[in-house]
Image 1 (tube, each protein chain N blue to C red):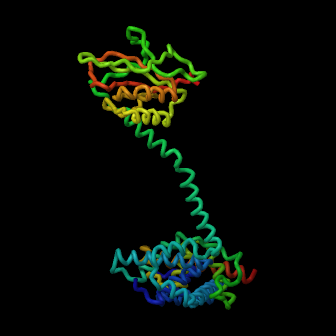
Image 2: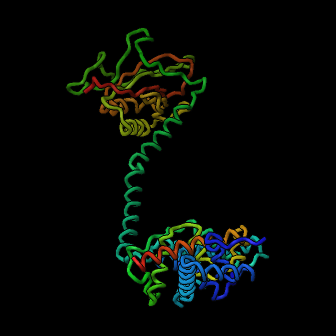
Image 3: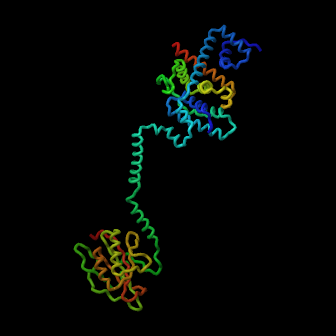
Length: 285
Length: 150
């Protein structure tokens, strides 16, 4: 079908004409139109000029060293470094950044991590675990408040005279030697408590040391100084001969009170069994 | 990956025209080369030219093409534009912005791929490529004419 070559068609076919992709018939028609139409002639001229200039730009080559750089194999890390321009930063800025990062890491490790609490937390964990130890059936549980189970006759308190300013809960009479306790048929146990102004780890350790120095050894399942709530529990056997020394030493820590009570468990001659609780009493100053 | 020196230059030229900073050019080139190797690995039968065009097309979308208005006469020290009209064309080309016309013009005239190769690579009819070239050239020519004649 023959169609008249208008300006619209001419502009639409311009690139194909310049690319040399038009058939002979259309080329003839476009040439004829350009010869007659000033605007289309100008349009084609500008288009040709733009195309030529673009092709001129394409003849320019990139620098050879850049081409060589691109041709070599690059590690992904190198690509990352190139991309973020780390190497293009001034050396001083890079050093400063590296040192700052290192310093911040050190500060973080030293300040944020609770180094000082670690020791306490480990001990707490250990003692909390020990608190779950159950006492076997044959061990006499200690009665916390002697007044609830006050034996007849009146209890005897052993120990030297109290230092000035200390309050005694009962008679402070001291007997030189303990009552020979054991008969063949009936046993005894000394029940009592040591009240200290402030119960700390050091105090508990000292009491344990005192007991051990006087020949005391644990008589039950739990270790000397076992934690019982906020108190410390001591259940031990010791030679009767060392009893007085023990009382003297314990009185240096606080106020000790022991009650002799009968018990079906018989202890061998020359020894005595003591169940003592160490507790804090802030009224004692 | 086996590319000829001419193909490396083609890829470099593409980015040199569109970007100003040499570090950006290198970064974009490495990414495009990586993309080409991935495409070749996925489809070993693909022609290398098609793979290059596809990689360049993918890169084009991510580029940040800035206008040349605020720059000095020579965009890169290694590439002085001695011809004024060529320099003018380059600046006006960038004024077209990040459009399909710019991409078509650069792929056709700057990197030298044929309309058929471009059409195959980008999975579009040849007529669409020709249309974009036509439109791009027309806009470029009008912008250049404005600059020249005021």
